[in-house]
Length: 106
Image 1: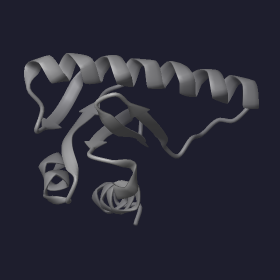
Image 2: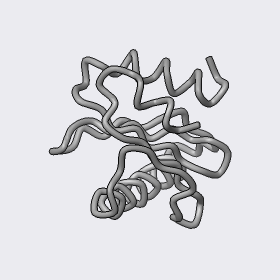
Image 3: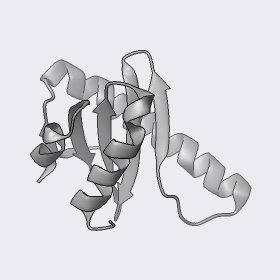
Image 4: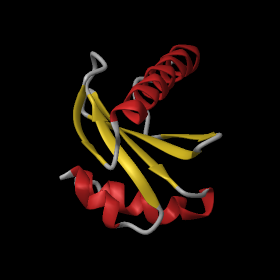
């Protein structure tokens, strides 16, 4: 399922991470990259939790992190988070569309 995202121009890798921080599925990621991406997901969860608490909001749609290695899109999927790393912010629209299609939200 996740490997489909690699066919989208600009997508470098993707991972589906469970609520307890375990990788459920991944595509295009080596073991060293996986550890780094799990750190990003954990940080993203902390930011999202803080924002939800401060804004008194129960849900969220997505979080874009523009980090040194390139942009990373975090998208909720039930209690899991789909991480999609891609080449540049200008590809965001194409990546968002592909993620929504994959997750059945298009």
